[in-house]
Image 1 (cartoon, rainbow, N blue to C red):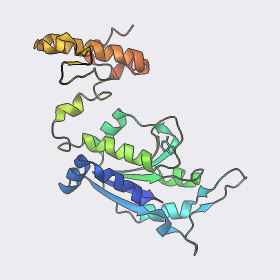
Image 2 (image 1 turned 120 degrees about the vertical axis):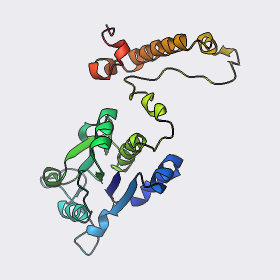
Image 3 (image 1 turned 180 degrees about the vertical axis):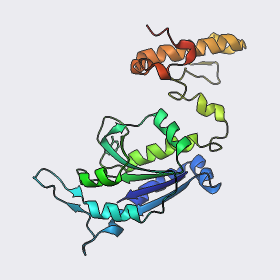
Length: 238
Ligand code: ADE
C-alpha cells in the first residue's frame, strides 16, 4: 500500500515513525509514505495557497489550483483513491478501512486547513470525503494519520500475530471484553475467578458475555447494525 499525503505540514507525519510497527512495515516494503508540501504548488510569488471565500464569511479557503497541481504531480497506481479529510465527510469505519486495504494499492489523502477548500476541487478530483468523528480539528493531518494507522494494521504481515487484529474491538463486531494480567489480586481487586480456572470454553463464554454487555452499555449503536454483530450474538440483541 502506498500512501501519498498532500499537506501544508509534512513534518506532522514524522509522528507515525515513532511506532515500531510502522517502521517495520516501511522497512519491509509493506507500505510507503510520501508527503507533498502543498505550498510548493502555489502559483504566486508569496507562496500562499489560500483566498477569502466568495460571498463573504469567516476565514480563508485553500484554492483549487495548488491542490490540482499537487495531485497531478503524484504518480498514480492502478488501484488508487483520492480522499479528502473533512468533518463534512462520510464516517470513517473499520469496515471502510478493511475494504480499502483489500481493494487499493494507493491512497492519496488531502488534508484541508483554514475554513475548508474550494468545492470545485472536491467535485472534480476527490473520490470520497472522510470524517474521523463528530468534532472539528484544525486540519486534516491528524485524521489522515488515523486513517493510515488503521489501514496499516490490516495489511497482511504488518501485525505479527494476525489473531490480535481479528480479536480487536470493533473489528470483531463490538467492543472488546475486559482483560487482566498478573498479579491476580491488586489492592483488594481480584481478577475474575473464571479467568484463573483454565476452562477455555467457560472463559470464551464469559468473554463473549462481557464484550456484549460492554457494547450494550457504551456503544448500543453498534448492536443496531446486524452486519457487525458477532454471529454468536445475532438475534439476541433485544
Ligand atoms: N478535519 C477537521 N476535522 C476533521 C474530522 N473530524 N475528520 C476529518 N478531517 C477533519
